[in-house]
Length: 272
Image 1 (cartoon, rainbow, N blue to C red):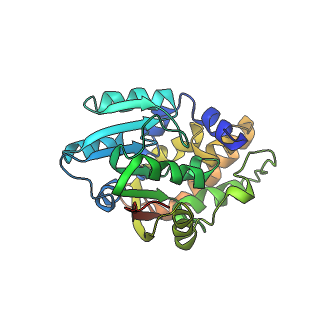
Image 2 (cartoon, rainbow, N blue to C red):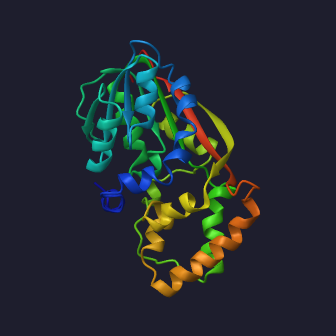
Image 3 (cartoon, one colour):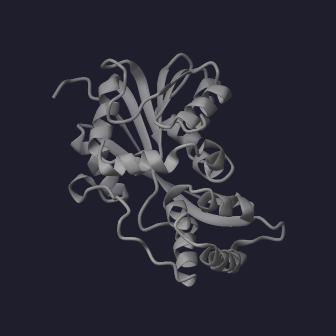
């Protein structure tokens, strides 16, 4: 694993419940489109990589697919097994999956490439375990960030939070632009002719649920929040309440504009 992979493993350790109670509903939104892009249907052998609490796996099972799901985090594996007991759920991580070549009809990865240290190796591994003519579909968060994600940057800036310089990042030679062209280019380098769609929506959530993500250590905002002292947390909360007021409706819920990139491709039937 790269230093970034090791950091991600530590960052997500034991956080299945915190994720489920905060950002899981946000990440669930593209699940149907992801499975549509993978052409997942009755009897298909579907691999859900980075299953988290099993959101995509459960939807694939409901469509009649034969589901295998993997995650690098044991607490996520336990949560997915409880949610989809019919699926084969295992602990495993990219870019080394415990399956032989061409095992699956399709592989999906919902917001997983954001969390790996070698994205190209990860996509090549997805290609390896999918049969020729099978499908691969992946989602990522785009850059520039949509308003929902930009909100946290604005909150931290207003609270005077300094960004640490020691947080691991994907090595520049292994990274890719988080744009539609960048994502399709990544899949192209893995030997896949990909197309990419942008999915835009307004994420409706309770303000406390949105706060609970970083407060529970989830994501890059959570990594930053966890380093702050109580006085700084209080300032962050004050700025959070001020900045989210713009997005609050009469029902008290937030309506946060956001977007995801969905890339999909068919595995070539020829070698090379």
